Length: 270
Image 1 (cartoon, helix red, strand yellow):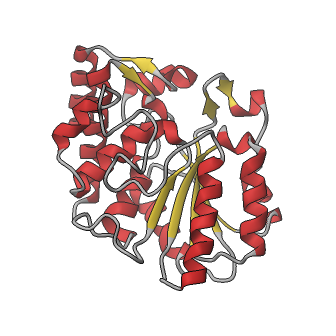
Image 2 (image 1 turned 120 degrees about the vertical axis):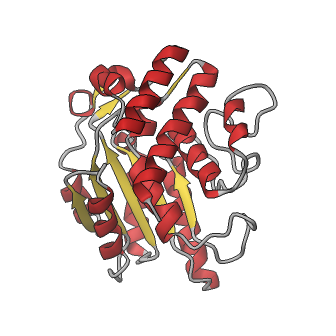
């Protein structure tokens, strides 16, 4: 399986999807493509033909504004036709701006206010332990989202419950809607904080490297007795020079049809 090609397809499809609306959360979608590619095409025990399969692995996108990245991943994995991506955030769509488990095939948890998705992931992991279905639960949180107290309440409880079926990722692109995270409310050093809360912690120096993220997930699956946090050092807007150059401004912005097509060609050539 060509994971690099799949990651490029996901980037292209999320850009087309956001382009169909005119603007959206481009930066934070592009920064998590590699981890989504690996989870959905290598690691997760899922069946797109049976989205509600009992005992399946679950994924929770707690930084819910990156929904278009998850939608593009689900479409490439076969949960629904790619044409549906062009209905993003339009009237009657099954693809709202933030994920909704009651609307979109393959979405395991609705995205709420920042922090809430992570609490739900912890609850799902505990439920899996109770019923003994062997499911793994994966979740992505943002670095700006990590300023929420709810993240740390859930982290403390998850460690206390020894939820070693839970693997979470922090998309540490160091930017949020209003600026740089460490200028607004510092979250560094994230790895030390998660260790202090009783988690196994792995750090990935290049969170947009398929090989490095792959190695971290593989190692995480061998760890027992505690939940695992993988801190990914990512680039906001990764893969599109225009978005990367915008920095904080890439959180949400408009791209013209011409700019979308130029970005798609850039990804194809990379």
